[in-house]
Image 1 (cartoon, rainbow, N blue to C red):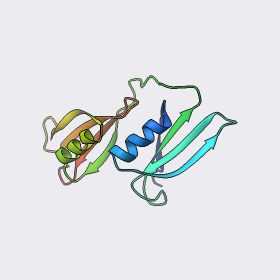
Image 2 (spheres, helix red, strand yellow):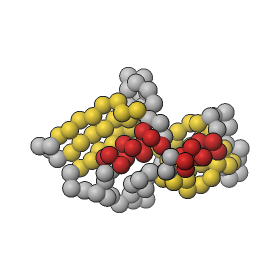
Image 3 (cartoon, rainbow, N blue to C red):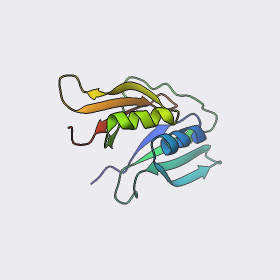
Length: 129
């Protein structure tokens, strides 16, 4: 068994695709457009779906925003250098909500970003877990 994807509902597909592609460097892997069922899907990731987990963005026609609730935590992405990744995110128009630094009480270097819909994305510096 393996995790295939994580689905996020988004309020504006093009805005979300631009964030994950242009700010975080993911690739669009495939799309599905279902006008009769009133939704579109875009699958994004860093590698092929046959070997890696990916992100499924779902746009439901006519819904431009969602309540995130209190159960959702965050996506986590490994990076070589958390501070450099944060600098790159900011230079590409992204929003850093917690600067790179050690997790409280530990040595793991983390940072947090926020996507256009308010979803949190954690950056974890490679080799610090």
